[in-house]
Image 1 (cartoon, rainbow, N blue to C red):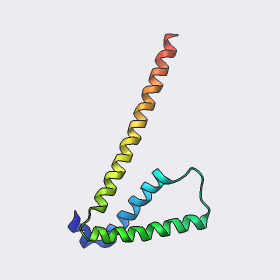
Image 2: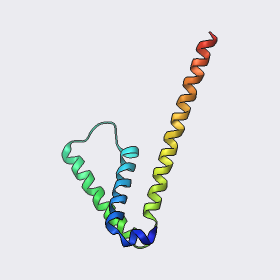
Image 3: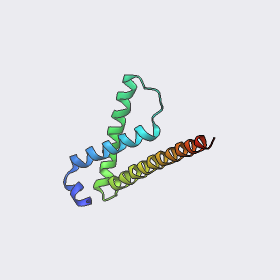
Image 4: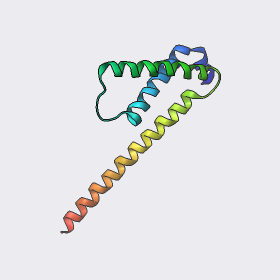
Length: 99
């Protein structure tokens, strides 16, 4: 996987940028929207950061793999919250039936 991404740097850059954007939007974004100029500046800075991470990826550090692990863990947490909410709804329905 490392070698393939080293041979295709544009694809590696796009993958890094998409994963960074996903992590930012799920973890660090506040509920309110930013003004348009700040939003553009933010994504421009993330594009620069993705370029720096691409250099690290090209130097044989597993940047894409680490971002994939982070996204996987975030998805695991979302599934856990979904299951917990489902269990709470089921427990609330069971207590309502007993009354």
